[in-house]
Amino acid sequence: MEAAGQDDAAPVLPDSETTEIISSSVEEGSVEVSRDGEEAEAVLDGGSDGIELTLGLPTPEYAEDAEVQDDGTAIYMDPEGIVDVGVQTLDDGSVRVLTVINDEIAPGRYDYQIDVEDGVVLELTPEGAVALKGADGSSQGMILPAWAEDAAGNPVETHYEMAGNTVTQIVDHNAPGVVYPVVADPKVYYAWWQLFKWSEWRWSSAYRSNQLSMQLSAWGRHDVIFAAGQFVSSGWNLLKQKHPSWIFTSSMRQQWECHVLGGIAEWGTFDLEINRPSLPNWRKRIGMRPLSATCNW
Image (cartoon, rainbow, N blue to C red; front, side, top):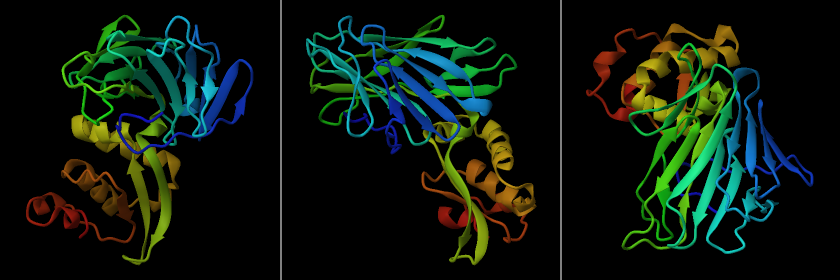
């Protein structure tokens, strides 16, 4: 079972399986998927820097109990072959639900009942995501904008609606030209550390410098596009929590701002070199140099 293609995050294998629960973990997060096909749900726990939520899954009424594929995907098969549902814990810590629509007679609405801890609220954003926010308005997680694709790789119209804590994905699959199966894959982030797929301190032979290198997750990329002003501070503060304070220089902060605000949102890596000289007026470089050189002075 393959995703519709939101990004290249890969599923991980479960840590353990019982007759009732399939358990997986990535860094500080853990995911427990119930075996029960008729009352399917996943419990997501982001650890000390995250929240806990229960995600009700849109399995058919008589779905079979979940079985784990070789790649780690837990799948609830529909005995009638109309709608199958898979759950993946991904290597960036997020969880992806794969709703596989096999036939034109399948429903066009799929409900996700989301139970969150006290103080966390769900908010449908203008760009079609579902933000998970704390009582103080702080970002605690996100369900990325709805995504669906048919078997030929063509996008299928889809969006979310909300009623209380039920998020419904509308998939307009019964349309001319749609090739089945259609895959719809909501992706859920539930911990602040999941803004980055990874970050590490390493040596760059190209620049002969130590550098902090990182790759944004799909959530991080979403925030760069739609909330760059917030992400400049939130992403930087998260990096400072995860790495020794002595490595952060004024130049590294400038490089970070340049990557985030300067339109250089590479989907590869951000590299912040510790010994690159300070350049407070880096903004003047935007539009005057190739994109690859703007933040490397």
